Picture 1 (cartoon, rainbow, N blue to C red):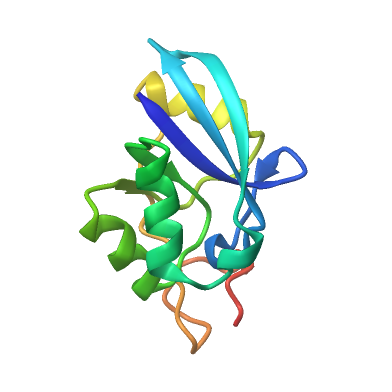
Picture 2 (picture 1 turned 90 degrees about the vertical axis):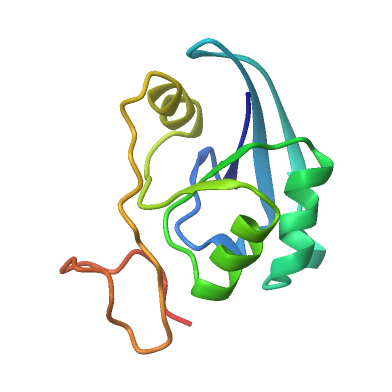
Length: 126
């Protein structure tokens, strides 16, 4: 299974559309077998381009913090499973998902600053 995670200094970037790079983790069971980093600098807020980047790298699951509704739709339309509301160190998050310990928290950002169901901002301000 291949998992992609937006990278911000080794942590899950909390805003998918602003991510300049993604770490793609090749999982073997619940352990990371191999990782590679791919640049997405030219694709910021290009939802279809980001979805294509994931598919080109044979990604099956995207784990992230917050995401806008259009980006979420673009990923799901190409058949990717999207897990939202994640935070922390990328490798740990991927291994937690592989163990079945990480569930999507439905963190979808919008332009009005609400919709999180949380008191704190996940970096989704546009």
